[in-house]
Length: 79
Image 1 (cartoon, helix red, strand yellow):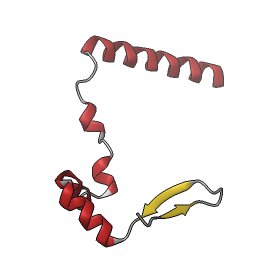
Image 2 (cartoon, one colour; image 1 turned 30 degrees about the vertical axis):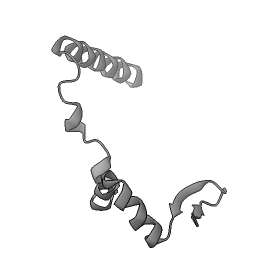
Image 3 (cartoon, rainbow, N blue to C red; image 1 turned 135 degrees about the horizontal axis):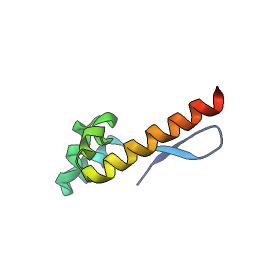
Image 4 (cartoon, rainbow, N blue to C red; image 1 turned 45 degrees about the vertical axis):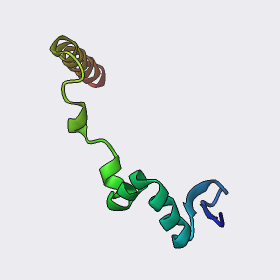
């Protein structure tokens, strides 16, 4: 396979380019790769709403209480 690597200023590989003929051959053999063409980079990243409900209400309340306490302590320290 004839590929090209795209690198950043530090020489780290950031992307790869393959000839379209080889991409077409791969997607013909592996249908699931076709869905990558339809996705934008933003579609791949999870959205905050994807994590909704992943902690219990009790844990969320404890985190909120801790955050409020930390803010109060911070404000008292600054004043």
